Image 1 (cartoon, helix red, strand yellow):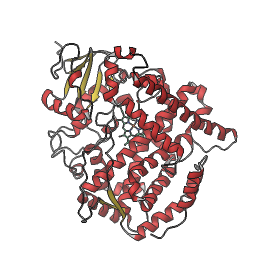
Image 2: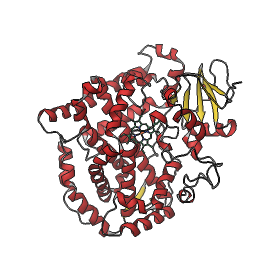
Image 3: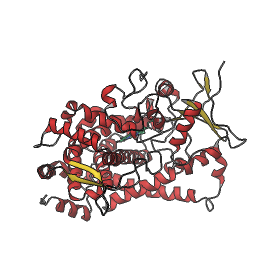
Image 4: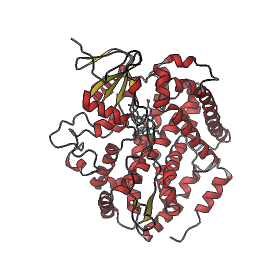
Length: 513
Ligand code: HEM
């Protein structure tokens, strides 16, 4: 006899809407999980939300039954802005399938290996910029992530964060994130009557239209640049060149082409950069783990060269540190919600079609039944057991790429993200010491590792830390490698603004470190 899921008590009409958390919802969802169990439900109006704080349930429903649990929930704001063409939030339909097929061809492990030269070069540029302006680390990691994906997709790099096109991209991205923030958008989805509010009283409708105009102008300009280069016979192997040649075969209309680029740039720029902002935050708070990782890197790499990806297999502690980073502060604490397209039954519970399914990664990774002292940053746990859990615990539903999601919606950028993470973690630990900022009396000002902004992928609230080269010799090696990467960069230094050209030229004048 099927049963119904437990959850917080509801009130007529609203269900749980009056207690639905709008800021940092993963905390409340985790609190409820400890009370109602690893799978419970919430009601928002007439709709149902199921929260999974249980890796087994997530695997059974989202990995194993992926053909009926890969839809995304209704998202009216995204519909207005992108007309259903943004792959990350698009419904599980033919548009999504076309775009997913296109993305899979560029981001396979083999294809990503071909992008490694520009990833290495950008990682060296990141280290070089940190020598010159360490206080800008927060925006510099954004520039790095953006430049890598911009080169892969549009064949041009972003050498400077505050150059007009790059600044505009991050401005539009911030507007989009703010508008799509679960707090503001969820109510419209669950109480559709709000859609009828006329535009003059609904500021969010005007904001959606303005954002749509900004997005279309920006992505049309980028696409136009690629088309012009193609016409001039100046191809440089970017994915948009391939796509323009195979548009008919891939069955993409112009709007899909535009939003395909948008999805990739947004997903590729925001995520990896948040990972690195968190990395600096955690290093500033954990000097012991930092020193342990540095001594392993020094043993494997030495003083005379920078690390390479081949070195990583000889660095168990650094690999453990990366896994612990993903567990301790997952980029998407609630992954990205899925939605059922058919009735499901799990463990005797009924899940109706159209149910939003949220995987509470935060709650899973902070579960004291699974992890010893889960609130402690402790990379060694991944040296003790494969999944970092307490010895003897059933961890068969955990996997190292759990922070990248589930089933057919699993992050297609996983290989690109992993190479960026692996290269930079080794480089940065090899090259720099990261410490808390000090006050006027020289006392360290502790960082707050729980101070985060909002959104589905919350970034650490801006913070200060001290990033200093570990030795002058290492600084010189970074500079040498940066100058040697000029040839790799030059292929992607196309269509640069005067500010960017001037910046690039200035950055290639050797400094006295
Ligand atoms: C630290 C880095 C990253 C993390 C932790 C991450 C995590 C995620 C997660 C949790 C999802 C949702 C999966 C699901 O619905 O089950 C996702 C989706 C997605 N990610 Fe990533 N991601 C990262 C980097 C990237 C990069 C570099 C790219 C692009 C180059 C990318 C492109 C995408 C796209 C396009 C989707 C939507 C997939 C779909 O809906 O079918 N991600 N990512």
